[in-house]
Length: 198
Ligand SMILES: C[C@@]1(CC(=O)O)C2=NC(=C\c3[nH]c(c(CCC(=O)O)c3CC(=O)O)Cc3[nH]c(c(CC(=O)O)c3CCC(=O)O)/C=C3\N/C(=C\2)[C@@H](CCC(=O)O)[C@]3(C)CC(=O)O)/[C@H]1CCC(=O)O
Ligand SMILES: NC(=O)c1ccc[n+]([C@@H]2O[C@H](COP(=O)([O-])OP(=O)(O)OC[C@H]3O[C@@H](n4cnc5c(N)ncnc54)[C@H](O)[C@@H]3O)[C@@H](O)[C@H]2O)c1
Image (cartoon, rainbow, N blue to C red; front, side, top):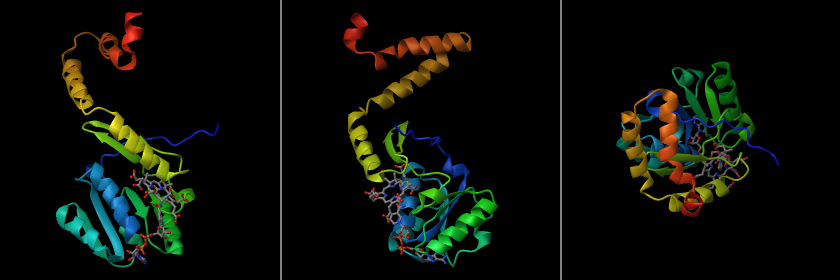
Protein backbone atom coordinates (compact mmCIF):
# COMPACT_ATOMS: atom_id res chain seq x y z
CA UNK A 1 0.00 0.00 0.00
CA UNK A 2 1.28 3.50 -0.87
CA UNK A 3 1.86 5.62 2.25
CA UNK A 4 0.98 9.29 2.71
CA UNK A 5 4.31 10.93 3.51
CA UNK A 6 2.98 14.43 4.23
CA UNK A 7 3.89 15.75 7.69
CA UNK A 8 0.95 17.59 9.30
CA UNK A 9 1.57 20.77 11.30
CA UNK A 10 -0.86 23.34 12.71
CA UNK A 11 0.04 26.91 11.79
CA UNK A 12 -0.70 29.93 13.99
CA UNK A 13 -1.89 32.13 11.15
CA UNK A 14 -2.35 35.18 13.36
CA UNK A 15 1.44 35.18 13.81
CA UNK A 16 2.15 34.64 10.11
CA UNK A 17 1.28 36.54 6.94
CA UNK A 18 -0.27 34.69 4.02
CA UNK A 19 -0.31 35.97 0.44
CA UNK A 20 -3.12 34.69 -1.80
CA UNK A 21 -2.73 35.55 -5.47
CA UNK A 22 -6.09 35.37 -7.24
CA UNK A 23 -9.44 36.61 -6.04
CA UNK A 24 -11.74 34.21 -7.89
CA UNK A 25 -13.46 31.01 -6.73
CA UNK A 26 -10.30 29.28 -5.61
CA UNK A 27 -8.78 32.33 -3.91
CA UNK A 28 -12.08 32.74 -2.06
CA UNK A 29 -12.24 29.05 -1.11
CA UNK A 30 -8.68 29.03 0.26
CA UNK A 31 -9.11 32.34 2.15
CA UNK A 32 -12.37 31.04 3.62
CA UNK A 33 -10.71 27.77 4.67
CA UNK A 34 -8.00 29.70 6.53
CA UNK A 35 -10.40 32.15 8.17
CA UNK A 36 -12.77 29.39 9.33
CA UNK A 37 -9.83 28.00 11.29
CA UNK A 38 -8.17 31.26 12.25
CA UNK A 39 -10.38 34.36 12.04
CA UNK A 40 -7.39 36.50 13.13
CA UNK A 41 -5.17 35.17 10.34
CA UNK A 42 -3.26 37.82 8.38
CA UNK A 43 -4.12 37.43 4.71
CA UNK A 44 -3.34 39.69 1.77
CA UNK A 45 -5.09 38.89 -1.50
CA UNK A 46 -3.57 40.30 -4.69
CA UNK A 47 -5.70 40.07 -7.85
CA UNK A 48 -6.89 41.96 -10.90
CA UNK A 49 -10.54 41.34 -9.89
CA UNK A 50 -12.21 40.16 -6.70
CA UNK A 51 -15.41 38.20 -6.23
CA UNK A 52 -17.92 40.24 -4.18
CA UNK A 53 -17.73 37.53 -1.47
CA UNK A 54 -14.04 38.38 -0.98
CA UNK A 55 -14.91 42.06 -0.67
CA UNK A 56 -17.45 41.11 2.04
CA UNK A 57 -14.78 39.08 3.82
CA UNK A 58 -12.32 41.99 3.73
CA UNK A 59 -14.99 44.24 5.29
CA UNK A 60 -15.69 41.68 8.02
CA UNK A 61 -12.10 40.64 8.86
CA UNK A 62 -9.73 43.56 9.60
CA UNK A 63 -6.69 41.33 9.02
CA UNK A 64 -7.71 40.59 5.43
CA UNK A 65 -6.41 43.08 2.85
CA UNK A 66 -7.32 43.13 -0.83
CA UNK A 67 -4.84 44.69 -3.25
CA UNK A 68 -6.15 45.18 -6.77
CA UNK A 69 -3.14 44.94 -9.10
CA UNK A 70 -1.20 42.41 -11.17
CA UNK A 71 1.09 40.12 -9.15
CA UNK A 72 4.65 41.33 -8.79
CA UNK A 73 7.67 39.88 -7.04
CA UNK A 74 7.51 42.50 -4.26
CA UNK A 75 4.19 41.01 -3.09
CA UNK A 76 6.19 38.18 -1.50
CA UNK A 77 8.06 40.53 0.82
CA UNK A 78 7.25 39.81 4.45
CA UNK A 79 5.04 36.83 3.58
CA UNK A 80 5.44 33.42 5.24
CA UNK A 81 3.11 31.36 3.04
CA UNK A 82 1.79 31.84 -0.48
CA UNK A 83 -1.22 30.39 -2.24
CA UNK A 84 -1.19 30.86 -6.02
CA UNK A 85 -4.78 30.69 -7.25
CA UNK A 86 -4.89 32.62 -10.52
CA UNK A 87 -6.46 31.27 -13.70
CA UNK A 88 -3.14 31.70 -15.52
CA UNK A 89 -0.95 28.57 -15.34
CA UNK A 90 2.18 30.34 -16.56
CA UNK A 91 1.70 33.04 -13.92
CA UNK A 92 1.13 30.42 -11.19
CA UNK A 93 4.43 28.82 -12.26
CA UNK A 94 6.18 32.19 -12.16
CA UNK A 95 4.81 32.82 -8.62
CA UNK A 96 6.13 29.37 -7.65
CA UNK A 97 9.62 30.22 -9.00
CA UNK A 98 9.69 33.53 -7.13
CA UNK A 99 8.46 31.93 -3.90
CA UNK A 100 11.12 29.23 -4.07
CA UNK A 101 13.75 31.91 -4.71
CA UNK A 102 12.54 33.76 -1.60
CA UNK A 103 12.26 30.57 0.51
CA UNK A 104 8.56 31.17 1.08
CA UNK A 105 6.37 28.06 1.31
CA UNK A 106 3.89 27.85 -1.55
CA UNK A 107 0.68 26.05 -2.51
CA UNK A 108 -0.27 26.26 -6.19
CA UNK A 109 -3.96 25.43 -6.02
CA UNK A 110 -4.35 23.38 -9.18
CA UNK A 111 -0.88 21.86 -9.32
CA UNK A 112 -0.02 19.36 -6.55
CA UNK A 113 3.53 18.89 -7.87
CA UNK A 114 4.20 22.60 -7.20
CA UNK A 115 2.82 22.49 -3.63
CA UNK A 116 5.13 22.57 -0.59
CA UNK A 117 2.02 21.94 1.49
CA UNK A 118 -1.63 21.01 0.98
CA UNK A 119 -4.61 22.43 2.79
CA UNK A 120 -6.42 19.76 4.74
CA UNK A 121 -10.05 19.01 5.31
CA UNK A 122 -10.69 20.03 8.91
CA UNK A 123 -12.88 18.55 11.65
CA UNK A 124 -13.41 20.99 14.50
CA UNK A 125 -14.99 20.40 17.95
CA UNK A 126 -14.04 23.21 20.32
CA UNK A 127 -10.36 22.79 21.12
CA UNK A 128 -10.11 19.60 19.12
CA UNK A 129 -9.01 19.80 15.51
CA UNK A 130 -8.37 16.92 13.10
CA UNK A 131 -6.83 17.64 9.70
CA UNK A 132 -7.40 15.09 6.93
CA UNK A 133 -5.37 14.51 3.81
CA UNK A 134 -5.86 11.89 1.13
CA UNK A 135 -2.37 12.58 -0.24
CA UNK A 136 -4.03 14.67 -2.92
CA UNK A 137 -5.90 11.60 -4.25
CA UNK A 138 -9.43 12.74 -3.52
CA UNK A 139 -10.29 16.03 -1.78
CA UNK A 140 -13.93 14.94 -2.06
CA UNK A 141 -13.29 11.87 0.10
CA UNK A 142 -11.42 14.11 2.59
CA UNK A 143 -14.54 16.32 2.74
CA UNK A 144 -16.86 13.31 3.23
CA UNK A 145 -14.67 11.83 5.97
CA UNK A 146 -14.70 15.22 7.69
CA UNK A 147 -18.52 15.12 7.69
CA UNK A 148 -18.54 11.60 9.15
CA UNK A 149 -16.07 12.48 11.94
CA UNK A 150 -17.79 15.78 12.72
CA UNK A 151 -20.97 13.78 13.46
CA UNK A 152 -19.24 10.90 15.24
CA UNK A 153 -17.19 12.91 17.75
CA UNK A 154 -19.38 13.95 20.70
CA UNK A 155 -19.58 17.65 21.58
CA UNK A 156 -18.77 16.64 25.17
CA UNK A 157 -15.21 15.80 24.15
CA UNK A 158 -14.37 19.48 24.55
CA UNK A 159 -15.43 19.26 28.22
CA UNK A 160 -13.08 16.31 28.61
CA UNK A 161 -10.23 18.33 27.12
CA UNK A 162 -10.89 21.27 29.44
CA UNK A 163 -11.07 19.01 32.51
CA UNK A 164 -7.87 17.23 31.57
CA UNK A 165 -6.21 20.62 31.14
CA UNK A 166 -7.10 21.49 34.74
CA UNK A 167 -5.99 18.09 36.04
CA UNK A 168 -2.74 18.32 34.07
CA UNK A 169 -1.98 21.62 35.77
CA UNK A 170 -2.64 20.23 39.24
CA UNK A 171 -0.74 16.96 38.99
CA UNK A 172 2.31 16.73 41.18
CA UNK A 173 5.53 14.82 40.60
CA UNK A 174 8.13 14.70 37.87
CA UNK A 175 7.31 14.57 34.17
CA UNK A 176 7.32 10.76 33.95
CA UNK A 177 4.98 10.44 36.95
CA UNK A 178 2.60 13.04 35.45
CA UNK A 179 2.50 11.27 32.10
CA UNK A 180 1.74 7.97 33.86
CA UNK A 181 -1.15 9.49 35.82
CA UNK A 182 -2.59 11.19 32.72
CA UNK A 183 -2.44 7.90 30.83
CA UNK A 184 -4.25 6.10 33.67
CA UNK A 185 -7.02 8.72 33.82
CA UNK A 186 -7.59 8.66 30.04
CA UNK A 187 -7.37 4.87 29.66
CA UNK A 188 -11.17 4.80 29.51
CA UNK A 189 -11.08 6.71 26.21
CA UNK A 190 -9.36 3.87 24.39
CA UNK A 191 -10.78 0.80 26.20
CA UNK A 192 -14.35 -0.45 26.01
CA UNK A 193 -16.37 -1.22 29.15
CA UNK A 194 -16.03 -5.01 28.57
CA UNK A 195 -12.29 -4.82 28.20
CA UNK A 196 -12.07 -2.89 31.48
CA UNK A 197 -13.95 -5.45 33.52
CA UNK A 198 -12.11 -8.40 31.90
C1 LIG B 1 -9.25 19.50 1.60
C2 LIG B 1 -9.46 20.74 0.75
C3 LIG B 1 -8.95 21.90 1.55
C4 LIG B 1 -9.27 23.25 0.96
O1 LIG B 1 -8.96 23.50 -0.20
O2 LIG B 1 -9.85 24.02 1.72
C5 LIG B 1 -8.74 20.52 -0.56
N1 LIG B 1 -9.59 20.52 -1.57
C6 LIG B 1 -10.87 20.63 -1.16
C7 LIG B 1 -12.00 20.48 -1.97
C8 LIG B 1 -12.04 20.17 -3.38
N2 LIG B 1 -11.06 20.45 -4.28
C9 LIG B 1 -11.43 19.98 -5.52
C10 LIG B 1 -12.75 19.45 -5.42
C11 LIG B 1 -13.55 18.91 -6.60
C12 LIG B 1 -13.65 17.40 -6.62
C13 LIG B 1 -12.33 16.61 -6.56
O3 LIG B 1 -11.44 16.82 -7.42
O4 LIG B 1 -12.20 15.80 -5.61
C14 LIG B 1 -13.11 19.53 -4.05
C15 LIG B 1 -14.38 19.02 -3.38
C16 LIG B 1 -15.43 20.05 -3.16
O5 LIG B 1 -15.18 21.27 -3.29
O6 LIG B 1 -16.55 19.60 -2.86
C17 LIG B 1 -10.66 20.11 -6.77
C18 LIG B 1 -9.20 19.90 -6.77
N3 LIG B 1 -8.37 19.98 -5.69
C19 LIG B 1 -7.09 19.77 -6.07
C20 LIG B 1 -7.07 19.59 -7.48
C21 LIG B 1 -5.84 19.41 -8.35
C22 LIG B 1 -5.41 17.98 -8.49
O7 LIG B 1 -5.81 17.09 -7.70
O8 LIG B 1 -4.62 17.74 -9.42
C23 LIG B 1 -8.41 19.63 -7.91
C24 LIG B 1 -8.96 19.40 -9.30
C25 LIG B 1 -9.13 20.75 -10.06
C26 LIG B 1 -9.66 20.52 -11.45
O9 LIG B 1 -10.12 19.42 -11.76
O10 LIG B 1 -9.59 21.52 -12.21
C27 LIG B 1 -5.94 19.75 -5.22
C28 LIG B 1 -5.90 19.82 -3.83
N4 LIG B 1 -6.97 20.03 -3.03
C29 LIG B 1 -6.59 19.90 -1.72
C30 LIG B 1 -7.36 20.25 -0.62
C31 LIG B 1 -5.20 19.37 -1.62
C32 LIG B 1 -5.21 17.85 -1.35
C33 LIG B 1 -5.85 17.47 -0.03
C34 LIG B 1 -5.74 16.00 0.22
O11 LIG B 1 -4.59 15.55 0.45
O12 LIG B 1 -6.76 15.30 0.25
C35 LIG B 1 -4.64 19.70 -3.02
C36 LIG B 1 -3.67 18.66 -3.58
C37 LIG B 1 -3.86 21.01 -3.00
C38 LIG B 1 -4.56 22.14 -2.31
O13 LIG B 1 -5.41 22.77 -2.95
O14 LIG B 1 -4.22 22.40 -1.11
C39 LIG B 1 -10.93 20.94 0.29
C40 LIG B 1 -11.97 20.11 1.12
C41 LIG B 1 -12.97 21.08 1.71
C42 LIG B 1 -13.75 20.54 2.84
O15 LIG B 1 -13.21 19.94 3.77
O16 LIG B 1 -14.97 20.83 2.85
N1 LIG C 1 -7.00 23.13 -6.30
C1 LIG C 1 -8.30 23.30 -6.48
O1 LIG C 1 -9.03 23.04 -5.52
C2 LIG C 1 -8.88 23.78 -7.80
C3 LIG C 1 -10.20 23.48 -8.08
C4 LIG C 1 -10.75 23.95 -9.25
C5 LIG C 1 -9.96 24.74 -10.11
N2 LIG C 1 -8.68 25.01 -9.85
C6 LIG C 1 -7.83 25.88 -10.74
O2 LIG C 1 -7.53 27.10 -10.04
C7 LIG C 1 -7.45 28.20 -10.97
C8 LIG C 1 -8.26 29.39 -10.47
O3 LIG C 1 -9.64 29.09 -10.54
P1 LIG C 1 -10.75 30.18 -10.18
O4 LIG C 1 -12.05 29.52 -10.36
O5 LIG C 1 -10.44 30.79 -8.86
O6 LIG C 1 -10.52 31.29 -11.36
P2 LIG C 1 -11.18 32.73 -11.50
O7 LIG C 1 -11.18 33.06 -12.95
O8 LIG C 1 -12.46 32.80 -10.73
O9 LIG C 1 -10.16 33.70 -10.73
C9 LIG C 1 -8.89 33.97 -11.26
C10 LIG C 1 -8.27 35.08 -10.42
O10 LIG C 1 -6.93 35.28 -10.85
C11 LIG C 1 -6.68 36.67 -10.90
N3 LIG C 1 -5.56 37.00 -11.78
C12 LIG C 1 -5.41 36.71 -13.10
N4 LIG C 1 -4.25 37.25 -13.55
C13 LIG C 1 -3.66 37.87 -12.50
C14 LIG C 1 -2.46 38.62 -12.33
N5 LIG C 1 -1.62 38.85 -13.36
N6 LIG C 1 -2.17 39.11 -11.10
C15 LIG C 1 -3.02 38.92 -10.07
N7 LIG C 1 -4.18 38.23 -10.17
C16 LIG C 1 -4.49 37.71 -11.37
C17 LIG C 1 -7.98 37.26 -11.39
O11 LIG C 1 -8.04 38.66 -11.14
C18 LIG C 1 -8.98 36.45 -10.60
O12 LIG C 1 -9.19 37.05 -9.35
C19 LIG C 1 -7.93 27.67 -12.30
O13 LIG C 1 -6.79 27.58 -13.13
C20 LIG C 1 -8.50 26.29 -12.02
O14 LIG C 1 -8.14 25.35 -13.01
C21 LIG C 1 -8.13 24.54 -8.68
